[in-house]
Amino acid sequence: MIRSIRGALTPAPNRSQLVSALTPRLFVPAWGRSLALHLPAHGRGRGLAPELAALLRQPPGSWDLPELPGFGGPLEPDGAVAQAQAACAALLGAEHCWFGVNGASGLLQAALLALAPPGSRVLLPRNLHRSLLHGCVLGQLRPVLFNLPFDGASGLWQPPDAAWLERVLAAALAGGPLAAVVLVSPSYQGMAVDLSPLVAVVHGAGLPLLVDQAHGRGEALAAGADLVVLSCQKAGAGLAQSAALLGQGPRLDGAAIARSLLWLQTSSPSALLLASSEVALRHGSSEAGHRRRRRAEAVAARLRRRCAALGLPLLANHDPLRLVLHTAAAGINGLEADTWLLARGVIAELPEPGTLTFCLGELPPPGVARRLPRALAALVQALGGDPLPPFSAPPLPLVAEPELALGRAWRAPSRSLPLDQAAGQLAAEPLCPYPPGIPLVVPGERIDAARAAWLAGQARLWPGQIADTVKVVAS
Image 1 (tube, rainbow, N blue to C red):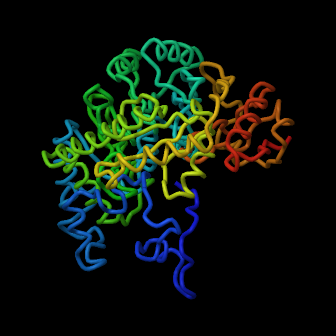
Image 2: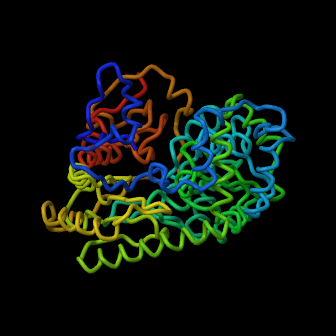
Image 3: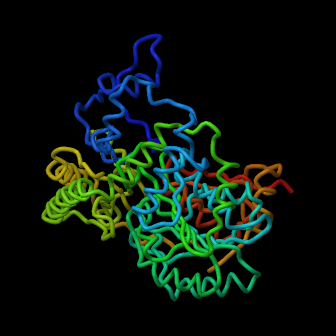
């Protein structure tokens, strides 16, 4: 989340800008008490796992340790970290667990490099996080991007079903062998799918499956996925950058994963973030964690009932702790709704043209079931109108590969062109509104006329997020 929060006090002269921003008593918005419904899910510490909160109350820096004997690290065979990883694997039903200190992003990249040798093709969904593109560059992999079902009313991609994935795999394999398949479930907005039939389709093709569950809780393991990446700050009670990679089954090559982690992870992992990974996973599986989540879901249910009573349009999803306001149904662009709410102390997580997503966390802010519906009703009263026209689906084939190798296009000399003049050109960089970091075009893709017109429309829908120019490979 990178949007500015207006109204913060200016720090005193000579005081660090970052220290000021991170000091709660100094970070006082002009509107007073804010309603923070963004990530990390612990809500500035309120919802941290109790053991982690207790650790952070120790003398500052006392927990900032190297890989001392007896403590170890994620790739060490002995020590506290190795024992914790083994315990968490057993707790979650995996055969192996590796903690990460570079977030889910770093573990997605390590998993991808472990599954696919240089030069191989990997099947990736269009709603992939950009870190997977970075992994393709690092591993010299050829991304094969597949389109997803699209909901014109909300402007959101939807999860594929087994029949959709079967068509995708057939089309992708017609172009040559694949090394691995990646799926995202749940999405940022909490949209999910029953993964078991999808796993069967992938395994039926003789391929391993990596599931990005940064916004989930490890359900993909029970469905049979080979590798699953979790974020301990997005759907758990851990700190940002703490994450876990879980693996199981005969397609798992532990040595290849260890090698990839060695390449991509720091040689000085934060002991605090390693502890955060363990504690968040343990807490989420404990009875205390289950009780906390049940209480949070009860708050979320009250919140949804009050929103419904006020006639506020909400999108159905599969995560009770993600509330998605369907702003397009109320006649409001989600980015404009976000700006209006920010000025009144309501901080959402993800604004998009047709929706606004709020993350309640496992310890929702006090009074959220009362305060948020009032704020959203005031928003609709102030800015609402007739529903927005349906969003146009991206004009994409079912599967597509960049014409020019991803890394080569990204490194090539480039020039900037207005979007309306980009037809026929090869993209030289991703076009990626943030958040959530999902690329609308990737380097090496050829931008045809229909795609250029669609991108120009997207630039109007994402004011300030998408430039009216695009970098293309210089001819």
